[in-house]
Length: 148
Image (tube, rainbow, N blue to C red):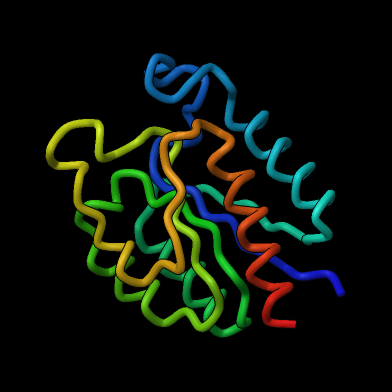
């Protein structure tokens, strides 16, 4: 059985490779999506990868995932710390939600230490660079296999 997975990326992630490479690495966003797609295929997932700088668009995608009963891997980026609207949409999800971060928010500025998304997340993977997404796919695969 092929599982569909929605991967949502928040603001500024489309600037990977040029935005603060000392924090986020030098891999471009298209290289990130390629790595995610390759790992998803290896694990038997059909993956839908989306990125937006628009909070309302991300909320609509979370509603879609809730209505479609899709698991979600999400890097909410800056919305992590203050978007109660995204947090409320995450709370509506019935399937696993894995929150990912390229950097380790807990090792950065104080305002990054709190996530409003985490209370709805099945788990959080942070600080492993782009591998955070690949680890999330592996964790999701195990979660879904244990439910089968």
